[in-house]
Image (cartoon, rainbow, N blue to C red; front, side, top):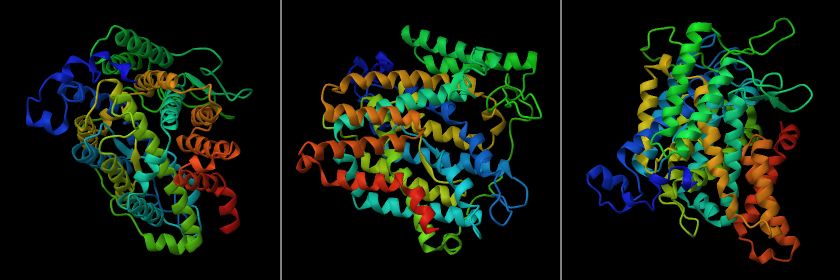
Length: 500
């Protein structure tokens, strides 16, 4: 994905420029072929690509009562502003931490999938409260941090063959491209087929027009090597969406139901209009809503172990894949497959689970949307600090964050998906030992809608093929352990059904 911005390639002339300031020296901005302005642009693009989490996380964990009928943040009614403020606060702190200490262009926030698991599988358990569920997240974070500090998580990363790391990056590219298309309603679910074009098999509606306009503009600017192509396209599409909404008043997307026609021509997630004063005092009622003892008591020791193990595996391997994808895009992977400060990156990500539990907003993790900032030229931790600062500001400016619709932001994900896909040429598909595991890794990420599932399938098949061809001794012992862990992960539903 180095071709995302030729002018920002580590091999460009800017890489030869000597550091000019303490900031440059600390983040190695010139050394990595970047500039301060590129880092800021990259941070802006990453933020706008993932700021939806400030709206989406509250809709997932803030609208589901626990087994006692209480909602996150306290009370018998949803407290979405508090969940949004807590989500932005924790994301901001962790992204700054990642940028300042690990010096890596990777932002963090509440993890999708993990939050849904808590909302729909954990808090409904008899006696389980939101504080208890967040206690499970805290325990998972402590366990995964111990795995990092003992060197186990880094050893696992080093044991993964280089071709699988490349396949992970390609698979993530397909995954986030599909994510962008689906979130913008460019493709939707259908009655006769799994997905379809638009809402009725064709492209209709002004929101779709905004998405297509933003995507085409993004590609044209990128092809012409215009600096800030992705950010320019996002801002332009947002302004266009605001004008259309002001004139036509389309409102929010709503699917058709049995008793209503819905609003299939509305905006996905955010309506691009400013309906309230842009500055609000944040409500941090979710902070310190955590009770690990209560969670263990409600689920039982075995049940709590299953919950923690499920969270652990998803967190453990999702981050590995995301780190590889971001590093590959930034040209930060050396010939041995190593990534600078990888141990620090893993420490910060592990601490993010702890922080998410303490903050009462679900486990935080590294976001694959960081690749959009890398495509814009980000190469250092300065961009992650920019993202963190914007998230912290979002605790006060939530109305502005909620103004950017999916249709304006998600073209960046499609663009990045294309750029990450270009790495597929590095995989030797003439070698069956490489081709089959790589193929499964790549296709199952979007098809199963899970980075972890794609990685797991690739790892298990890699070990199986090697053993079948009499090369069992050539496989690193950690790969056997990882494969077994993934088998347990794939069967966790059946195991949980037997134990709970």
